[in-house]
Image 1 (tube, helix red, strand yellow):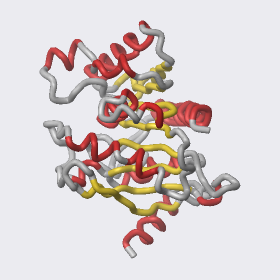
Image 2 (cartoon, helix red, strand yellow):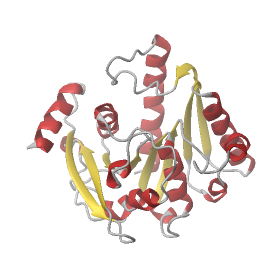
Image 3 (cartoon, one colour):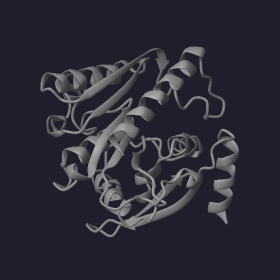
Length: 268
């Protein structure tokens, strides 16, 4: 009943043309038996003739998956994708905004790739898109690079990172300020990076360094740099009590066209 109610509330918050439904699912981490809860978002009316959707694995930020996040993820699904969103924070009963990074949560989230192959609405064997927001960009990079499982890169078509974090969160300050994660050197899939000009300075610098490193080795990467857009500019219209400036509304509208076209191009 709770799932059905959540789905109805979600529908009420979306544009009239969308018929996105939200369901719950989950899996077990084979390394230690942790139960990983997850959400599935899709619009059945936008399925392909065989009933499937191109699939995206969504890796959430440190805030977890809250009401605003569900509305945001539903926007991705409204473009015709099946979006699987593991709640890696809740799987290990972590409070929102954890400071130390729990490495076990990486494998919790990465198992979503295998889980997609068990879902009838996601065509088995098809490559998936990764969509990482903030800390989720770190998870997405680790998965795409095969740092957790060497079989993962062959399952990933491309990667979107919104305000992505491209460094091990537990590394010391000099690494956070001056270096990016070495796994970036192993990513071969196309990458779309998005960052707001008025995001935190350290995060902007981190994205700039990651972009430079990728370009220098000839990687397929695009960077969208948004003027006067603050951190979480594209969440602010969903967070109660927050404000979204005209520049941020334009930034969200533009960014959505970019990641929609990017995902549709690489996740057939």
